[in-house]
Amino acid sequence: MKGFNKRYLALIVAGAMGLAGCGSDGKDGEDGAPGEPGPGPNPPVVESSEITNVEVIHHVIEEGQVTFEFQITNEDDALIVGLEKVNAELAAMTENGIARSRDDFEGVKVGGSASEATEGASLTVLENGNYEFIAPMPNVTAGTDGIVRLAVGGGDLIAKSRYIVVSKPENVHTSTTETCQSCHVDYAASHLKHPSYTAINTDGEVDLVAGCMTCHGNVARDDGGYARNTMQKIGHINHQKFETDFTPTNCYTCHAEPVINTSIAGNGCNDCHTSDSAAIQAIAANSDFDAREFHAKSALIGLEERQTIRAEHSTTTSAIYMNEIGEYCTDLKLFKGEEMLDIEALYADGTLSYASAYLHGYNNASIVGRESRTYETSYKGDGSASLCFAKLDLHTPQIMASSRITFAWGADPSYEGVSFTSYSPVTELDNLANETEYDRRHAVTTDSCTTCHNNETNYHKNGSYTEGGLDCVACHNNGQDRNSAGSAPGFGPMVHSMHWGVGASAVTGEPNSATKLNAENCVACHADGIDLYAIPNQFMRAKAFHGGDSTKMASPITANCFACHNDDSALNHMVQQGGSIDEEVVADWYTQPTSESCATCHAEGKSYGIEKFHVFER
Image 1 (cartoon, helix red, strand yellow):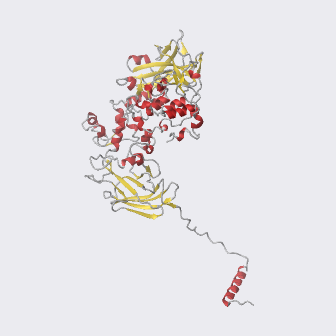
Image 2: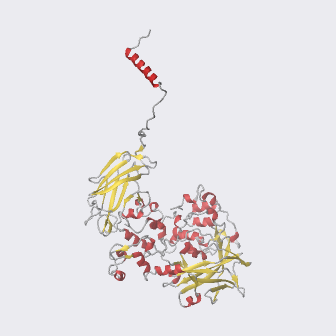
Image 3: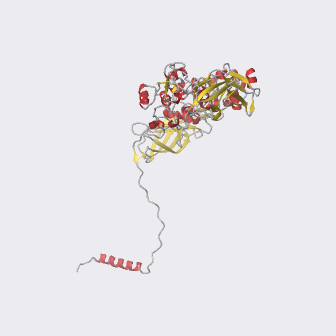
């Protein structure tokens, strides 16, 4: 018989009795409440990043220092450990605006900056990925208000983060990211000054102006460190170099909010005006005015007057009809609101400087040339003008008209006046009663030109910048075959070239200011993208590509692309896909289909879609 230890035997007996007792009434007790979940697995951590994201948890401005608590993650949202570099700035709000002194400044010092290397600074790990940075700034007090900016990382392992505007006072700037980037689109991706300093706010949205003002404040410094240009000088003076029909005195272009000045001799005004100038003296008694409105209403500038003329007036151009002597006529009407004005009287008293019309050939939703170049004007007694063309030159199957009226303003109204262009319905040449709407494709936004060309004038020859340059199409179209300073044919190719192609240097011999903007930011004009399949399969006359040789024509997509991508390798690629810039013109050239197949690969959504190489979204 096997022997048992007495202690073990006692345990066995006690266990058996417990089991018997458990089953005595057949009932279990109630389940207890769920316990608190235990700690999860530790989140992954990394020691390096290609992109460093920062979440600012807390910051406080204290006496002599600013303290930050933040968490950093990499491009895969993994927490980053081993951070060694951090820097912060505070540009203080003063009675003269935003200011931040530099270390070698010899005046009343305000604001401050610090990095991990600054004496008295500390960078402390709170837990994986979370840090505290105490930035000593001796000129800061607990009551200091201003723009607070932070950036972390840099070096071999941890990429430097975007600059972050942690906080800023309300209404600290009246220009905005949106107004700046209406032209610059994406400053961070540009090749202009300091694109890497483009800041974001704590929600990850671009805060361009506040980021710039951390260094370029409102208060000028004659000595002491870098970034001596004030923000207002950058806006008011540096942008005057934009040479074509841009005026810095249209303050609404940049200032989305009212600009209330309290010192005529102070910030902003003295960038352009001396304190003893007549303009300053005239308003010196008024210390509370919106500078935007003041400049717009100035008779010396004339902006509001031109804007009012444009807002109040409109024109119409009638469908072409034949008069009793067999001429092709169109009627031009001018309205102020609903009231039709007397063109003859206004022309006679000098209110109008120009009233004219063109007769066009039309095919496949495109203007294909000037049908007639001479006309006679008569007045019908109801205020309208009739312009009649005795003969046609092209005899295209469809014809239409465009008209142009200019209100006289300035020394040369063809440039400085206020012009209106309108287009007639399209009629069948063999049956003028058969009308359809004019429907030329125009793939730009209404404000795509006036966003930058903001002085409400014309480019030339009574053609304004309104409606995305629709005025220009009356002369710059598929068949008019303008030389356009040797830039490119038609409308779209010409605009591309005049901004970023050979045309950019055609006027002065030097690249114009548009070349400083990113050419790939097509969204500045083409906010709704580009549908290559929607481009009419139709040639355009192309002497602009050939030194004035009017025997050549180009396929449309190739013409537009070659206007910017104009080297031999680019052209060779286009030609291999059926494109051309040097086809011989034939009598019915506008009916001939092209062979280009660009959309097969480059239409939006395709493997090499145009949107993969150009920007069509903001």
